[in-house]
Image (cartoon, rainbow, N blue to C red):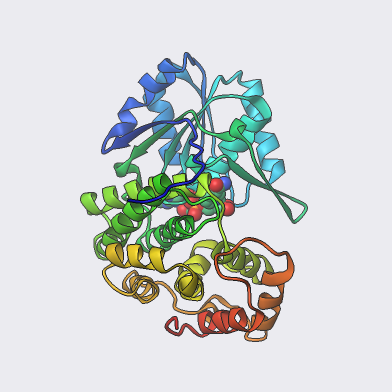
Length: 353
Ligand code: NAD
């Protein structure tokens, strides 16, 4: 028997999951009572957006294929102007976190409903979080106004995600679930989802690395990514996310690769404070968890060290200082020397201790 004491917040969303589920889009637009969809994408995924517009026929009023990384305010304002001038009554976003971010930004300004078709494992579609950039500064807020009404997960939309991005995007998703297990707001519902998600992604990612169009593996990965998105949207994150944010911002490192490299080391740092979580992780990962995550990163062909991403060696001490600059919650107290050692190992690409 277990004594339980927790708070659990769930976010409303209608989720349709499967293969070929894109075909359900016209019904979902009709279900929302909408007549005039604006389809959003990045320039690279314009063809996918145009296919959706074709599928919607006269229920689509346009395609805005201008989504870019980090949700810059000027792009969001342009897309908002387009939505208003076309009298759009629903937003349809097809893509990864960048396109979902644009949809959220337009919804924030217009209150339009959103239907999202995710094509990466970023998980933004499940969170009430939006980070917008303007003049080099990022402003992040959490508001239910940006939560998509409907998410259509179609495994087929993910088959062309390049294997390298698939692997690191999947590891980034795993990081959300790992930190959810030891979050201050951790609760049994989210922990159950997190463990299921980590297991599914850990099984799927090495298969996808070898066989990018393997549908069962893609299905497991997308399912895991959905659950990881719920984890990210439901509880606070800790040392790992803080370190990645600091490292990414200070040295302009790529987001998903940085998460992939740092995660085994951040988990090893926290391990002494979270024996129960380490036991649970060992069950789903099939070995000592920090090393299992390090090996998983090798199996997907990810870079091993931050040095390979271009971080200079003298950055290690500075990163340790800035990771400690604003105190935040973490299961193990933040110790300057141990954190500097953690970053040094991640920089060199060594195994976690
Ligand atoms: P992304 O959306 O920028 O996609 C990367 C590139 O891959 C783009 O050019 C995209 O068009 C292309 N691509 C995506 N899916 C593809 C597919 N299936 N086939 C071929 N090409 C495809 O990258 P991302 O990692 O999904 O998202 C990163 C962004 O999302 C970051 O800005 C991050 O901060 C944000 N994010 C936000 C949240 C949140 O809760 N607000 C959560 C996670 C990530």
